[in-house]
Image 1: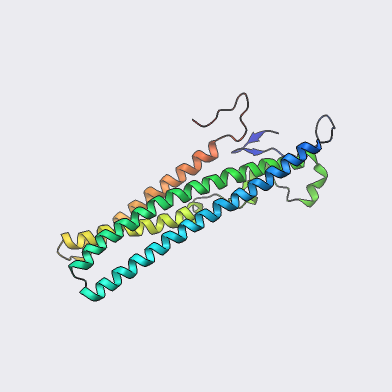
Image 2: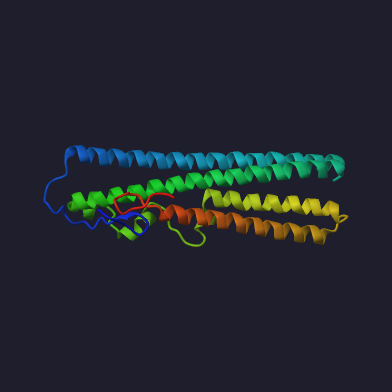
Length: 230
C-alpha cells in the first residue's frame, strides 16, 4: 500500500502480487484496529459535544443572571459591573472550549484517515469483497468517513460553532465597555461590538483552518522517505 493525497491508502482492489492469502493473525490485527479506531472516533465526538453542552449551559446561566440583575437594577451600575465580569469570563471559556474541541476534531480526523488506510487493505487483500463494500477512489475516502472539506466545513464543526458564539461574546463585551466609555452612545457601542466580533471570528476561523491543513499534511505511515511531525 502507498500513501497519497493526504495519507489515504491506494486500495486499488488488486490482488497481492505474490498471490498469497493474508495470514489470519494479520486479518485479526486489522479488524481489531478498525474497531478500536471507530470507538476512538466515537469518544472524540462525545467529548466535543459534552464540552460544547457545558459551554452553552454556562452561557445560559450567565445571561439569566444578567437579565435578573437588569430587571432588579433597571440596567444600573450593578448590571454593567456584572456584565463586564460575566461576559469576558464566558468569552474565555468559549476560547478554551473551541481550542479543545478543535483538538478533538483533529484527533477524529486522524482516526478517520487511519480507517481509510485499513479500507485500502481490505480491497488489496480481498478484492472479491469490492461489490459488497463502498468502493471509492482513495482521494474520496475521507468523504465516506463524513469529512467533506470545503470552505464552510470549519463552521459546521463543534469548534466552529463554539467559535461563532465566542466571537459574539467578545463583541458584546467590547460593546458593553464602549457604552460606558462613550456615555451611552448606541452607535459607537454597536459599531465597536460588530467590528470586534467579526475580527474575533475571522481570527478563530483562520486558526482552525490552519490547524486542519497542518493535520492533513502529516503522513500516516512513516517510511524511509517519510517525514514525521516537526
